[in-house]
Length: 401
Image 1: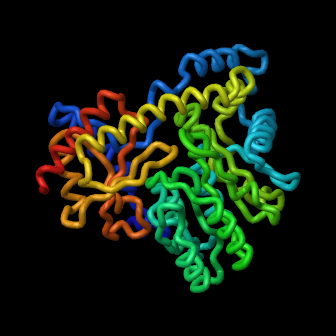
Image 2 (image 1 turned 45 degrees about the horizontal axis):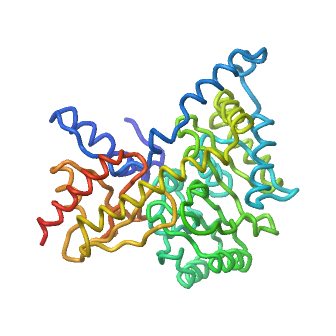
């Protein structure tokens, strides 16, 4: 008789990822298209396919091409690590002489490595609630006790966080997405960042800062990262090139104090040995040949326009029927329905009428927790799809009024 490992007990496919399969099945069986306002992919117009193809060809025609297709160092392609270290220091004040970078297969692997290295089964971590489903999957996969702390529109509720830290004195780390949080797109204020770091020091725990959306700011001023405040080496900093170059390349990174890196490297060795060298060299080649700043400015222009269009369409078709905070960046708008509307029913009616969003409970530590929110992604859909999809949402809303 087959028996699953105990750690699989709480590990289930994330609702967001299952939705992708569900939509594909509906489209295939019913021969109709559903407007995709659900998955957080970058827009195809933001991915520099020609430049990636050009750099890939150069890498594979180089005299070192064979080495690119062999095994590489677990920590990553050294020139990329050097370039990234300099870029983070110069642009964001991130990193100290005691910090090191390891290249990972996306930011999700960076988060998974932190869970693998720092947590035993049954250990506690604290996270914002709601939060990124990929991180919840990583934590559940190791049998970690996840304590969710509710959010305000300016970040995690610090009073409730302190209550959670007092109740869980052996907390291994606090997981947060300070910039353009997924799914809410809310941003943590500078004051809260400072207080959060002080709280972590006070209660002798670490912080895992997921900063995958850092570069996607369209309005307002950049805020200092938690890692830039880190004088004691307690912040684990995860980043990614998925949102600014290509998610399919699967290149992310983890910056951490050097005293942790031997264990983190050993953990990665037993996971995938090393991140694909070809992808790493493509990212490095892109940074050296074209630079990130100009490309990121182009992406911001594309998404700023799409986000403003989304606001205009929501106002036109849903008006005062929903509530939402206008984010200053990110890829999402997090919308709250009136209390008399069942979110899952609203979601299903949307599918039936030809548009897909994600219901808020999909992002909670306890997926059974009630939520009045749904998430719209505006980066992947075309402008025509945004217009059609949000118009349909307006039609769905009329069914409940």
